[in-house]
Image 1 (spheres, rainbow, N blue to C red):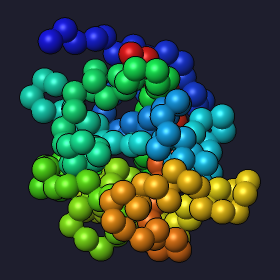
Image 2: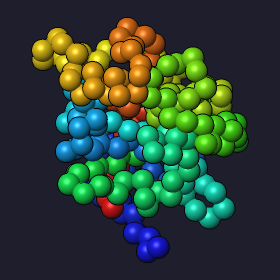
Image 3: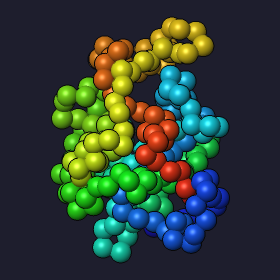
Length: 211
């Protein structure tokens, strides 16, 4: 397979040193996907981060000499994805990937972070968004990786809503989604989403990665 170059495009925050542009283990990759029904539905029921509407998130680690993303996806569950494939759009989609990094005040153990992530590999995707089962959805995985690494203060789970902010009704895409997977809509249950993580005071959004 021909691997694509990963290019740093723009700096989003105020940090201007070259070292800030280098990848680090434990960096968080936030993905915005447009023209995808489920990604758009996630964005419609969660707060946006400026003009960015993130619907997916993963954690960057290094395996040998390769940069990999620990993520939970619909097709594979919890898996390792090469960074050069993480942001590739499907046909008709538009994707942006932004790298976030925890502020230095929010310390964590990289070895424990990686160990927990590896332990979750091959677990199924959490279609029910159930915080207490063994399956994982993307932001749940990221949150629990940092907790396992000793960082409990960077992110705060909140009650979830699947209602469209404009209409106050359940978003039709979510109604169809949970019906298809045989689950009730977990309205008001504990959870976390990529936009909330990106908006955390603990996270600096540093630069965009283009594919």
